[in-house]
Length: 380
Image (tube, rainbow, N blue to C red; front, side, top):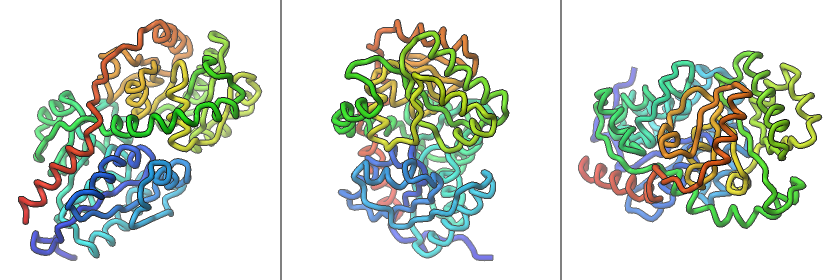
């Protein structure tokens, strides 16, 4: 069995590992600034989001260079099999390239596989978006983020709350509060997204300034049993009945499969004001999020983006690892109860949109790169 690398074996370079749409979006500003810095860096794309709309096309949307390494064989696997497959793939590249640092983002399987592959080879790990906790052990993402935080050497926390959580847990790595890089991407791309709004609304049969809701849902814990899927369909029907406005629902491939397996999708297709779409490209989704009156979601990233864009959100979960959205008043938790979802929506529609953005000033990427440059110099 091969020994781990010593510091003398490693090259002064940084490997950025990502594999899903949220990772690409949140690492976009870091990648852009890395390209202008003195650091030697390369990008490995695991292909965890095997749908191009959810993965590889995002590089084009965000005007990023294609990744240096691609892997597209992670489709249709369990969490364990997918993580193990990526771990083997990433280890082969790291053995060949021998970077001094690996940077991962968030809480998906790509982040866990990247951090483990690096740590087992003696490569230092930096974790962007460290310290988030839902305290819900049903979530695979909760396992991932905790494990990555506790083996990381650098932890980039988005908020002071996240940093306090890391300190309470006694993590061994250095903690830096840098803001949330989702703000960087939203601010950098908001105008480009707005330019697509008129075309998108026309495609959906909506008039400019016509009120509509956006709906996204993909979490395993919401879809793991038929009862949850039925509740999701019930929320859609109840919201359409109560508010009489169009609801735009870009369906994640996994969500579509579950709706088909439970025969709920056939009934939903008959609802006249429900607009079911395939997954949207990032700029198209950002455009609709910016234009909608309210968003229902179980996505952590959408909670953040909506908060930054001053769009009220109702989260279809009993918990959130983004409690800052609750505190500033941009979000409410509704679980999967249709009546509770309607009550939360009524309250959010009455709420003024002047809440403060708790996630930073849009310069997270620059802070991350500055810290990485300092760490690279220290270890020379």
